[in-house]
Image (cartoon, rainbow, N blue to C red; front, side, top):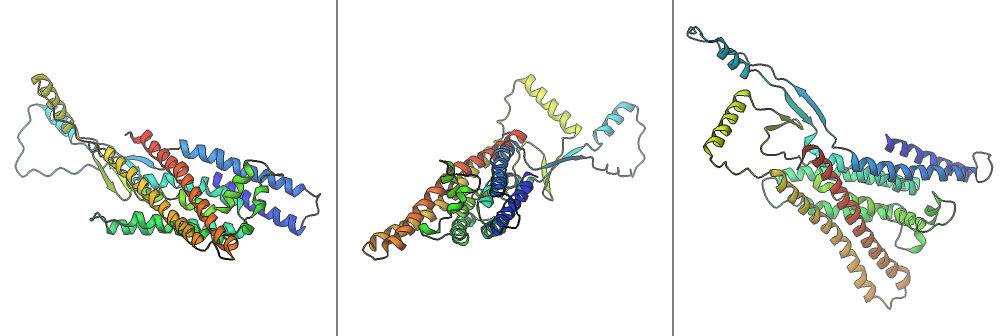
Length: 378
């Protein structure tokens, strides 16, 4: 709901901006500017305050229901039954065979991805849309759709390589996201030149120049594509990743849901009697089975590190190439007009991507894993 309200406010902001430039409304000079500043500040507050707090404290996006399966009909006896002398034994046996209620957890096939995607595609995307001009907003919207389509394609590729260890989806996705961020940079109206910087973005939520907010707004406007793609790198690991419950739980996955069936009365009685006899005889119990969630956590952390490193390696390679050729062409007449700004763009993009990967990517992944921990335990 907050994201929809923010999008509506962004549309109102740029409509008032067009009305102010085209003099559609005959109002006092500066009135529309004041209204736009308050609207922009409200959008930033919703994104940075409410959006971040909601992402940090919300639980997994799941639905929990209960149902009781139907009781299977008992087979008809082929021989005449013998008369029962003890009615209590027959009743207890029948009670043990009654179906017991089961718990259905819906949405377990994408527990990690459904929670984490709120960070790059709502909390981070909202201020980036505000600081871009309308055509740049369309580019960011198409970039978001491209990232989601990429995640689905990589999920299908991962299913193809599920039986082998050579899964190229992680490195391939990180490389494509880096190239997509570079492509989005040029499609939002920016070039590798200082003259293409959109300085008016510093005055969208402000009346005058204020440090350090104005430089931050310029960075968000200039490197919007790289920031969005770098923040979406953990989605390569989390998207369509099913949650592995403890091996002790009797869980079965059916149609993107997990069903937990409690043990039957006979199983509970037999386990209790076995435990009681083991305690009486003093026998040592068998060592507990290792929890699959611990191994899954180590795998997730290693894959996150690999994805972020591969994403930064692409930008490092681009920066290395620009540095080499800028040094080789240092006597060129267009050095300070073409090659030096391109080298500055490569270095600044690399620094921005590293900061976003360390602060937003790793921090957001930690919040996602903590949200699942609070609900299912670890």
